[in-house]
Image 1: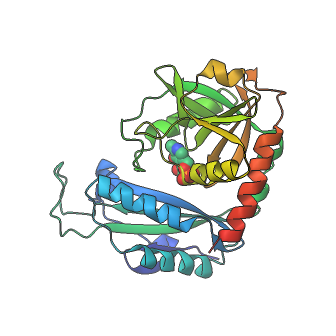
Image 2: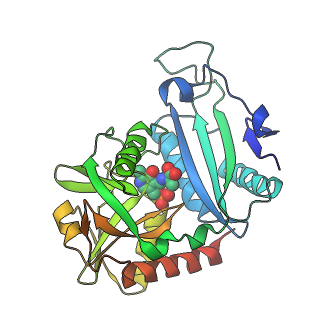
Length: 286
Ligand code: PDD
């Protein structure tokens, strides 16, 4: 089955879906994106992703191509047309394609580019990694200063994943001024003496939609949460560690820079949070 992709108002077979060489996303990484997971054909936390998208657009003075209700319709249409059961929907908006390359933003009436496509991942919620845990390395955080805006400037995170791969690991946690900011495409957490510790929100990290949900569920389950920076040494001495993102949900981390965390196996708190997150998100999926 050929994948059907949405481009600027049209549903097209993927080999016919095209954008201009002058697109600002292509030339300047002048674009924002969202990744929404799909379980059993339903969207997980669509509202959270739509709200963050609006915020990203506003922060960059970028025009929205349509409202959130229309975006929901397109998401659902893609799920249907691609018979998507488990996987993700990738959405990207750019400042459009003026007729030339110019650092200055194009005229405000320039139509933004809107692209959405599906990625099928059968059994997304049953990832074997949830049983084994991930190994991470630490790397310097060399990204720009507005990481709270979900832009498509992903070269450094991509380099980080390659550094992790070269070290025989699954991902990298980025470190700035001695403290962990986040993973290359996820938020980072440690657990010490029953307290869940994760970096406080600011411009240094992406405000994860999964993070917001997991912290809400943790507090509802009477777990203690501290939102503050933590160091690599503190993480290595923690009882457990994990990451969250729309595509991994809650995923345990069992090693950091070659040192086992806790028992070196996924811990009970991360496992419980994963269970609660999946259960509650499935219930609220639309
Ligand atoms: N990444 N931090 C960064 C740098 C991210 O790129 C992501 C998401 C997150 C987690 O955010 P959320 O819980 O809203 O997915 C944190 C997506 C999944 C990606 O780039 O594929």
